[in-house]
Image (cartoon, rainbow, N blue to C red; front, side, top):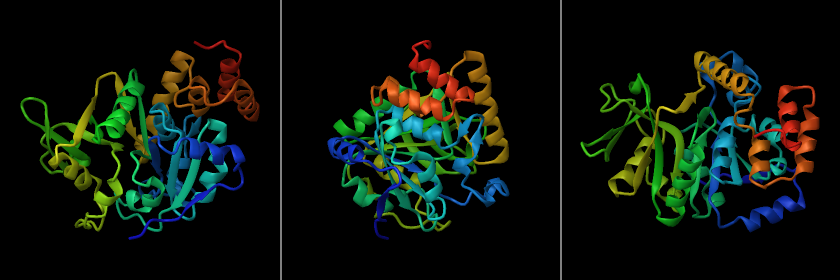
Length: 321
């Protein structure tokens, strides 16, 4: 299996974007895996990717994109099906309006999550990276700190990190088990008898060389390159850390009609209660100093008649905390 060609979105590409990717070449790279058929959401996904479906007031893909941005990642590869890539490009462009450099890569067939590192091998160029699944939503106080800590471990200590969350039905997920001291000792994919209630979420950080390690994997009984097996290789080498998402954090996998509805209700409730907007890429970029006030005002003008646009305008005018 060879690395897939990585392309830029030429519709929005700029000279600044090209210079930016060179400037950031030595920093952590991101992968946003937005492939798959979305069969569990049919017929909603008959004409579009599930990651382009709305979660309250914004596309689902904005949420995992924001997660990578909160980790300080500005160089991101979006992987999706050949049919859906033009739609992601139309929505996100080259990323410059978010202060990012976005590239795109086609996944001809969904052959497991770990396949992403083979498709992205040339793009990663043996640099450290983070990957987030396109239907995962994360929220919670201190999340940015946890993300940046995982990024530092990947870059400075050559260690991988996964994030785990307590769930009531762990048999539906990859599960991490711990010994008496709280040290991770095993990982299992959808076990019939889970060793713990902690599910491994769709967010992973890896040191340089993850593509080479992924190349040693063999397809499972499901015919896929399993991310759990890849993580188990790091665990066996003593190079895997597990960050537990506490009670104040939320992780939602919006891959079914029920979970997609729940995610929208969750976002709506928090935003109406707090008067803020969750997972707003423009806001993250502005507060991080990646874009200026003029760029933010342009983004606000593009959706001026919506609450999303009103939020961006309020941010630009300095009336938000």
